[in-house]
Image 1: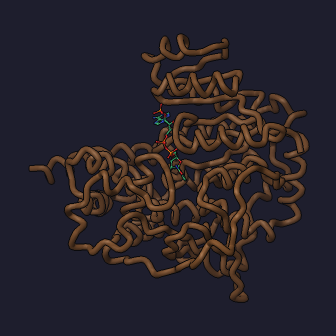
Image 2 (image 1 turned 180 degrees about the vertical axis):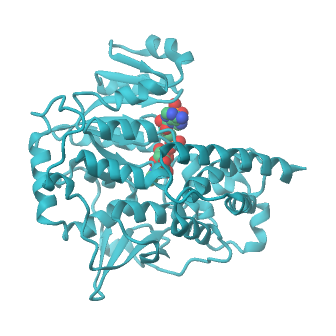
Length: 424
Ligand code: NDP
């Protein structure tokens, strides 16, 4: 297998940092050719000086002097949202890893697909918001969407044994051509093999997403109103960015992941379930029609799924610690507290209704998380805001990108207004 040349969107975040660790660990298989940040110019420069990618993008143009001043070499520098789209289409890139928190990664992801780049997606929000469009565009352009989220990466690995011959051909030809095919032309017309990306899920009875349960897994519901952002930011098993850590506490993270699984694997929401697994060792499971269940296990370190998404379809040795089953102790599983954590039912409702409702749920949640972190609303207020906004929404059944973006903006405005009314 040739080296994969990777652009990392959101390089200064938690996933970005883990991606740089992976690249350092397997330099013969992975080369970083582009890095981006929103406004953290200093951190972007430190990372760039270490790995020396040819291209960088800093969205916040006002910080460009800080970036230039801290760089020890002269890369090509893009700025602004347009710059993000340009770096996502670099001719010397094979794969674009999208790790921008929230919805800012949507347009660059679509641009990358259009330019014929494979996508490795950590940003679940963009799949929740526009999963139908992303997966359709990927199919039409003959590119792969590889899951980075540990649960979906686990499911992908469990389903891979069922990858069709056509997909295997496509993946092999893609891996072989990855460095020869520099600057491959946009909108390659997909051959049957290229278009045959959909994994075979006909024998899948259930996709079972595992959830750690977050820091409040055992907290009585009557205490929820007094929980602080500091308590919510203490995740028991994962170290992550602030937004996803709060989502893990409310279980909206798992709700978003249910919708993400629906789009990534082409399964109905009714076949997607959640089980609480506090140790975060089993990253998710697939139950087949004969009752057999496959699971993927590893330590809770995002380097595992990031590496597999980048090196797929190959497995590559690394320096990550193996599981020591003798020391693991018990692996526990439990049914979620659906009534106490309404996020799962709200997300199921949004995912089953489809159309613009998932985008509305996602946008309202983003506003609610910020309001909670700013102490404008209490912890249960996050669920309350999301429920109120999705109740108010008039769903568009088969939205195009403009309709999705409009629904997103509408939901943000509604949620912001509702936050103000709660504060009164
Ligand atoms: P962080 O908050 O740690 O990092 C976010 C990154 O996105 C930073 O590089 C930030 O730049 C950049 N960014 C933020 N806003 C914008 C914007 N508007 N335009 C361009 N870039 C922007 O997030 P995480 O790494 O934790 O999460 C990233 C994504 O991955 C999320 O969607 C999350 O749900 C998903 N994910 C994360 C996991 C984890 O373990 N952390 C696990 C699975 C999925 P700057 O630093 O300059 O602000």
